[in-house]
Image (cartoon, rainbow, N blue to C red; front, side, top):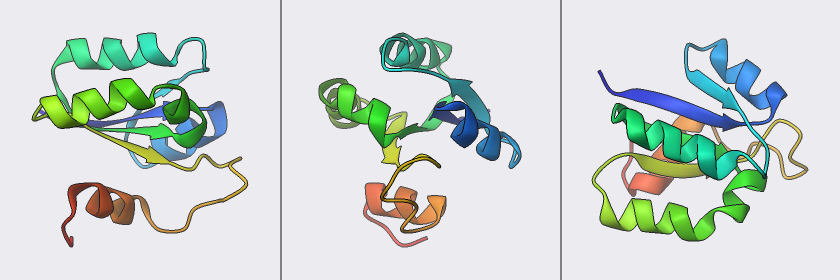
Amino acid sequence: MDQIYIIGDIHTVSAFRLSGLTGIVSSREKAETDLEAIMQKGNAAIVAITNDLADHLSDRIKTINLDLSAPLIIAIPGIDDPSGFRWSVMSYISEALGISL
């Protein structure tokens, strides 16, 4: 079964775990390794990664999104992100897919 994963700081991951998502607490140093571990599982449909970590992995994320049919990697603000959440997570997914859900 395909899953949605979240990679980010402890606060963001904990919040998403409450809604049933699988989360990985990560850091800039571990983010690439954690993303690759999810890729190896082969069951990820969507991977949401906080902006602070996604910025560091932008080239890898672009490659995954352009070259593979799954997973879709989306960047979302973390709970501690100064820009905060502009939309719901579903809105971020809709924007990344270019569709209306």
